[in-house]
Length: 206
Image (cartoon, rainbow, N blue to C red; front, side, top):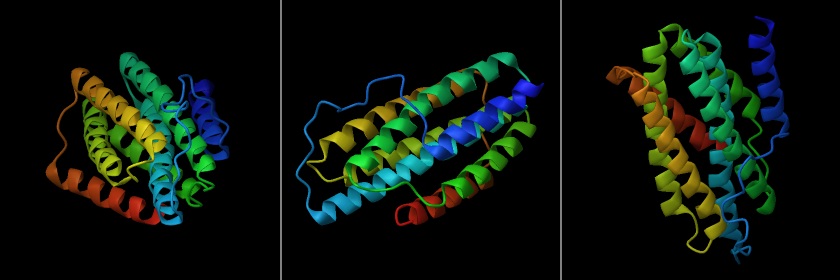
């Protein structure tokens, strides 16, 4: 029982202090740093800060959902997905450093809010919990596609990272669907999108 609380606490500490290491090589790590204008660098940094914040939220969501999941297999699936999301966290954090940019100053707020949402989703039961994962990953996949289109054309390093992230998110959504997810009601899906839009708008700048 104690371990159930120690693991999420440890994940929160590592996420918010930036002490995470990827298990997989960073996509595009052998690509030379592109020659970006000041405007392109700011825009790329803003987009990668949003993506980093999204990974902070993902760590919180998976930690909370695993904490309240009833089924051991579902918990194991969350743990596997969270580990891959930790790669994303490390990749985006490293890319921000390369762009001479910082993570969002509000990451503790985003983490706490996402953890609360994850608990609420889990309380509704494992199938609804999995449905939340499906919808979350679907929306994340959409916004990552938009970021690929918006990133500076010659910023191939950022594009490589975001492309791999998008592929991983699609697999996580498929995993949740295969595990028995049920679709969420339309108002819930709309509320999730609205909350994500607010986060993206703020994290891009702050």
